[in-house]
Image 1 (spheres, helix red, strand yellow):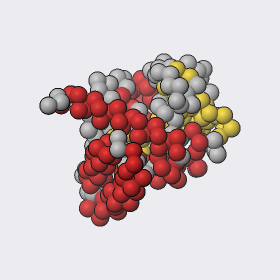
Image 2 (cartoon, helix red, strand yellow; image 1 turned 45 degrees about the vertical axis):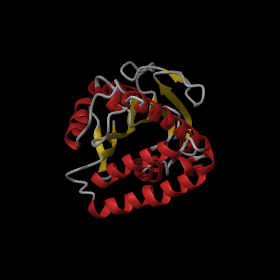
Image 3 (cartoon, one colour; image 1 turned 180 degrees about the vertical axis):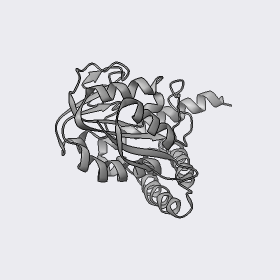
Image 4 (cartoon, one colour; image 1 turned 90 degrees about the horizontal axis):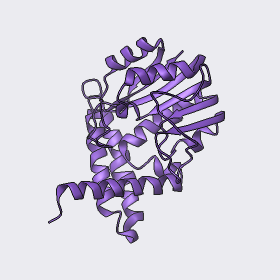
Length: 245
């Protein structure tokens, strides 16, 4: 019988493969990977990026760069940063969020999407982002509150709206938007989605129907049900904020 550790490692590898495949297929596929991803997409990409993202932009933890295509529509120059180089993504800078390799007042916009929970010192990270932002520039940030452990052992924090307010205040940033991304049902739907996809993805001839079921009967449905019974105030899945320097 395979060990629990080996099973978890296999699922983690499959999740990475699915993510990379869907990102390569385009945003309409990627954003329907799970309820949490779609909920964040609807807030960040469809609302906040068009409003606040402009000119010179820094993505401070881009991973496989799922937002690269979107950012191109709204900025003149984007810098994609991550802690390791990934040849399958559009990373063009390897760097540390705690020591950003840029001078002060370099960017009109910084984005940090589902990154801050993996940073050992979030106060220093936000200070660094504030340092490289131009006066009047904006930070677009998303973080989890309800989440399974992931990217172990580099999974350090979960955030509340009160903690986020303290982080921004400490860095001298003014919050202009702060909203939960969903509630308890969204979190549960996310776990179901990931389990369903990773359980069947290795069977290549069923991938299309599996994706359709996940998109329509898990991802979209979870978001709708969460709006009715998600208890977002008491059980926020996560938060998105915009802060101004």
